[in-house]
Every structure is written in C-alpha cells, then in structure tokens.
Image (cartoon, rainbow over all chains, first blue to last red; front, top):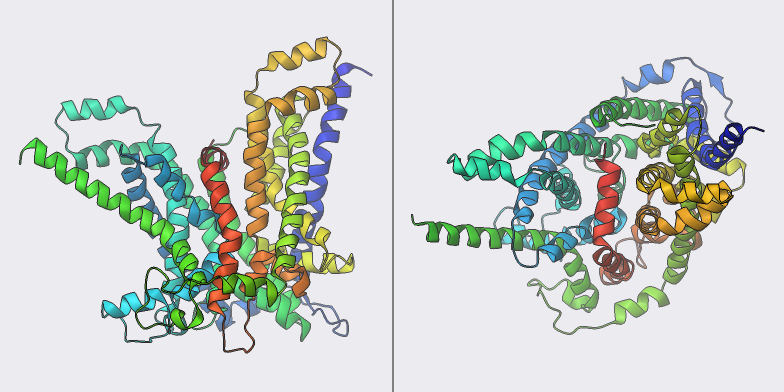
Length: 295
Length: 281
C-alpha cells in the first residue's frame, strides 16, 4: 500500500469513533424527530401510529399555549441578551482598567458561569422566596413590592425574576469574551486619540466600539442561540407557571408527560422541529459571522 | 477641574464599579453559604443577618443522613468522569486526523462534528428517549454518558485540532523519519506536548457534563440514579409544602465549592479554552 493511502485509512479510522457517536446520538434522533412529526401517536403501546402529513404543524399554529410560549421565549431572549450585552460591555471595560486584585476579580467572574444552572436557579429561588428571601426583603425595603409579595408566583414579576437570574449568570461570561476582544485593540490607537484631544467618551465610541463590533456580534448570536432553547432556569424556578413557559419547557411537557397519556408524541416532535429550525437560522448567521476556516 | 481631582474621581468610580462587579458575582454563592449555616428559625428571621448568629453544621449532616445525596454525587462523578475520558480520546483522535493527516473531506468532517454543537438538546430529546428506552439504557450510566459524549465532542475536537495545528511539525516529522508509526507518535510525542490543551478541554467537558440537567432529568428517572443537578432540582421536604432551604443550600454549597476552587485555580486555561470555542475564527 502507498504511504498516502495508508495514512488516509488511519485518518478515517481516527475520526470514525467521533462520527459514530454523533451519528447515533445526534443525527439519527434528529432525523427520527422530523419523521415522527408527520405522525399522530403517543408513547403508550395501545395508541396506533397514524400518518397525518402536516397536520401537527398546522395545529401548532392554532395552539394558544404554543403561541404564548413562543412570545415568552422571544421576550426572554431579546431582553436577556440585550441586558447581557450592555452590562457585559460595561464590565469588560471596567475590568480592563489597571487596578489591584484584577486577576482575582476576573477569576470571580467565572463563578456564576461555573455554578450549574440547576443549582444557581435554586439559590435564586431561595433569594426570591416570599417568606425569607433576601431579594424579596431588599425590594420590600426599597418599597418596590408589598411585604411577602410572591415574586415567582405572580405573572407580572416571575418572568423578570427569571431574566434577572439569566443576566446574573451570563453577563460576567459575556464580559470575559468581550474582554478578550478588548485586549486585542492596540494601545497606540488610544495614545494617538489622546494626543488629538479625544475625551473618554469619544475614545469609547470612536475606537472601542468599532474595534469590538465583530466580537460583540459573535457573542450576541452565541447567546441568542442559547436563550432560544432555555429550559433549566425556567423549569426549576417556576415549572413554567404564571406565564413563564418557554418553547423548550412546553416541548418537554408534550414529549415526556402528555405523550404517555395520549397521542401527543408526533405533535411534540413537530414542536421540536420548529425549535430546531428557529435555532438553525441563528446558527447559520453565527457560522457566517465567524468565517471559520475548517481545513 | 484639575487633573488631580479628575484622577481621584476616576479612581473612586472605578473602585466602586469593581466592588459592584464583585458583589454581583459572589453574593448568591455567599448567601447560599450563609443560609446553609443558619438554623431553620434564623432562615425566616424578618431581619436576616449577613452572618449567621448561631452557625450550625446540622444542615450538612442532614443532607447525607436524610437523603441519598452521596449516591447522587457518586453518579455525577462516574458520569462526568467517563464522559471526559471518552470525549478526550475520541476528540483528540479526530482532532489529530483533521489537523495533521492526509485526508479528503476534512473540512466536511469538521463541519459535521461542529454542527452538532448547534443542535438544541430539546429537539432530539424525545427521539433519544425512545431510542435509549428500546436499548434498555434508561436509568443506566451509559444511557447518559453516550449523549454527553456526543454533546461535548464538537467543542473538544475543535479546540484540540486548533491546538495540534499550533504544535511544531518538525518533531513529528523527525519521529516519522526514525520509523515511528503515526499512532505511536500520537501517544508518545503529541499527547505529552498537548497536556495543557488536554487539561483545558477536559475541564470544560467535565464542567459541561457535571452541570447538564435536561438529559439527566429525562433519562434518569429513579432518585438513586439522579445526578447532582437533578437531585438538587427535585429536592423535596417531608411534605409538599415544606422546602428544606437550609439543607438545599448546604447541598448546593457542597457541590459548588469544588467547582469554584477549580475555576479559581485554572482560570487562565478555562478562559483561553472558552474564547477558543466561542470567538476564535
């Protein structure tokens, strides 16, 4: 065998395990979800599987619960990603200044990200508790809410509390990504601007922001991808009650709860496909903006 | 305003801002620690104190005495540990082949693997559940490890292939001239040289597996198979209306403290690994 051909065989042998795992665990289930979305059936063996074409998709768009979860997901995504970007940028600029203990502060910024969402959601659920929650007490002292007001039990406040937790968790992470971009801006640019008499605000809007635009764009789309499929924080803090149900939470109810009592699995699969397509749009934009070089 | 006062104002503002950032990042964790050390009556004190008045470790004892929390920790260690090892092996093989070997369709293979990182987990949840149930893998370690390997492989492969690419080629070429086979070169030369990259990606993989909730919650349906995030999410008191917050916070601290230490120790590697995954083009 020629050396080149032998090397190709070795190469394919080396990528094979990875390809095998993602085929069985990711691509095949995805294909199966698409296929199942055209049928009406459940997970109980006595429900007959029936081909219904696009019925599940048509029904979804007449399903008020679906439309409500879509709206909630969009609000959650837009508000949390916007806040995370603005605060992230601000914090990045702050920790880019020289001060004592800068390394310690940057390390501390990894903590919210490293705590499992399931656990930080419970920490915050306790802080929002209507009896002993420290956040509830704090907001009471500021006269923002009545004493003992159930923040997580009220339609007007629960979603905002969940957004607050997501912003808390993700902003420092966003800040670190932006910080990496900040450090690539050559110091000479600021020097030159200072000599030309540009003030702090001008230096920020004329140098920092334009130089950061691609980093911010990438981080923003990356976060949008995540926010659109949000599950953990919503499920743990409210179980999707009082108008906080997102697409993923509703999808799991259909696939894992209702599918055992009725013919809901195909319908749930259709929702899974819609979530997949929705996220694909942003994934394509994300990949385009990265200009990845793969070979 | 003189430059001196201007500088002073800047310094004060900066210090205040930094303190705010620190409180933002640390307070919820600090509050969990404080709450876990408070006896139950103190938890619902109308004027909560920032330091426990009568600190007690009883919540920490109860977490292990009243529920199988040590079993949950063990489950998480086994699942995350085996996931990390498997992903590192599969990912470094694939990453090395893509970075160094002669192979047509490399870009396609890398794109295929990377595309999985975009898959929303919820979109494959139902089908994956049905498949795992057919294979009898619900409530088993392997039924959770396999999906975790699949979701952590894309980032691992991507970071490692970038890492391998940056290694000096000459050493491997010299080894080839000396008659060292590709696999031996990989194990005896490339892997030892890549230790920092392997540690960073291994950490990211471990943290991802340790933190995952949706798959664990769906594929592990018995409390004795729950991983830590599921056990904490499903934490319940004796009655439906009584949530043992002190115990819950103790459990949260027990499993979060090692992560916090890990993050503080490896901060530089984690940050560089993360930015390689998220922004490196």
